[in-house]
Length: 444
Image (tube, rainbow, N blue to C red; front, side, top):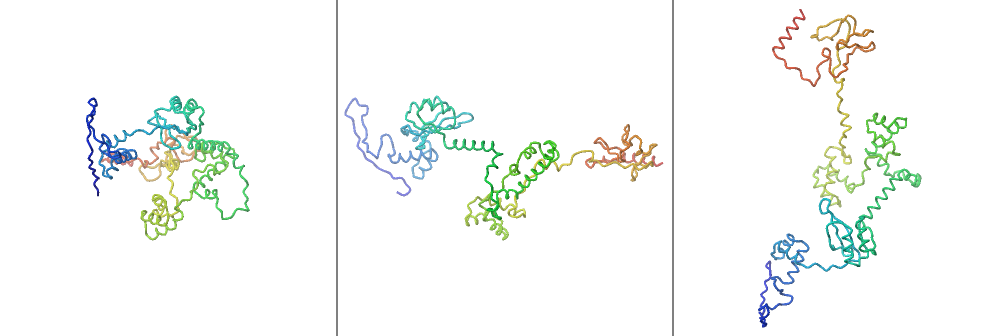
C-alpha cells in the first residue's frame, strides 16, 4: 500500500421491507466485523481512533493518527472520545480517598480503586455526607485508605462502619517523622548521655570523623570561635545584653550560643557532603593545566569516564580555577549586612579637622600660614575658667587640654578647616577685590 491508506470496495445487497407499516422501507445488508451502521470507519479503525483519543486526547491523538494515515481533526477525535461508553463501575475491595485543590480554597474529592489504581469518581467538596452516601450506594468496601481529615473519617464511619480505615503511605511517614522529631527535640539534652562510650583504643589514628571534618570548615571555625567568646563573657557573670553589645551581636544570637552545650549545635551549615565528582577532581585539574577550559568538553570527557552527574556541577566545580584559586577552594561568601555596616565610618564630630592649638599670648594675622594663637588678657590654658576663644559665652574646665574640640557637629568658624565634603565657595572678581582690600587695611 505504501504511504496511502487501503481502500476497500464493498458491494452489499439493498433490502426492502415488505411490511407497509414499517418505517424502514429500505436498508443495506451489514457485514459483521467489517461495516457498522451509520459509520464510515471499520470497527478495527474505530478502535484505533478510540485508543488514540484515550491516550493522547485531541491534539496529540490527531497527530498520532496522522502518522497512521488517518486524517482526523482534534474535534473529531474528542467527539469520538466522548461517545465512548464508560466502563462498568465495580465496587472495589480497597478504596482510596484523597482530596485535591481545584483553585484557591476550593477542593474536590477523588475516589480511586487501590487495587487497579484507576479513578472511580470525583466531586467538588470534601464533606462527610457525600462520601457516606456514596459508600451506602456501593456496598462491599472492606478497607479505606485515607489521609488524616476528620470529615473523611466521619463519612466512612457513617457509610461503611464495618470497613477498616488506614492511613496512606505518605501521611503515615509524615506523621511518624514529625513525632520522632518532637521526641528528639524534647530530649535533646539527654541524648548525648545515652550514647555508648567510645573506646579510644579501637579507634584508628588516621580515621576522620564527622566532627573533625566539621571543625576544619569555615563554618565550624566561626561557630567554635563565637561559642568560646560567648561562654567566656557569660561565664564571668555578664548578662546577655552586655555580651551582645561587646561582641556586636544580637541578644538572641548570644542567648542561643550561651544555651548550647557544644559548638556543633549552633553551626550554621553542615560540612560538605562527598560528591560524585570527587573521584574526577584530579582529572579536571590536569585537563585545566593542559589548557582545556571549555565546560562542555570537560563534561563530555567525564561522561565517557563514567561520571553520571549534571553539567552544572562541573561548571561550579571549576569556578575557583577561573579565579586563580585551587580546585577545592570554596566559593567566597558575600558579606553580611552586619559586616557591611562596620565598614561605614560613623558621622561624628571626630570627622572634622581638629582646631588649632593655643600656644600663648601672642597674636597672629588670620591670613598667615602660622598657627593661630590668642591673647585675651589671660592665657586660655590657665587654671581659671576663661572664655572659650572659639565659642563665645562658654567657659573651659581648668583640667581641659589645649585642643578646642567642638561639642556640636558644626566646626568652629575661626579654627577649623572646611570639610572635604563641602566644596569651596566660588570666587568672583568682586569678592577677590574685597578680600584684598580688607587684608591691606589690616596690614596697615
